[in-house]
Length: 190
Image: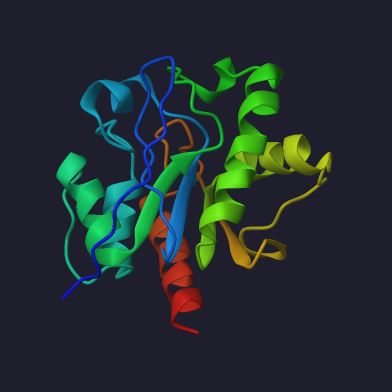
């Protein structure tokens, strides 16, 4: 039987996605920021062309197919120990609409939450998400971030960076995204 998890509730002064965070998670999935489609539909990676769900289901990271939906996010959280949040909580129709002020405001909040909840792995979707997190929490500009496990840790949490599954990131095929999710699965099994 799956461990019962309760997400810690955070309130925001604007409409955005709820965080799915608590102690004891295997993974916290960290997007750059919520898309307007995701906020409208109420769940992470809701844009139909987003490849997150297909890569996840194809990777074996979870042992059952999960449908893209609020129920799917809740199932990943409650039954599979995968939480969700973002580097920046302000929704936009494109990550390019984010400003330095957004990262300055939100990256330290994410950092504090990762230290508070200490997942086994902090899973950043995209180099942009991770590099801006580093820049605005540690004042570190990394010239080149490699995919996969990073040498840095956040508290006791390993850091893993995969290509962003957004349809705007067409440079990476579904097969490549799936392979990176499989590598995350392998890391969790070690």
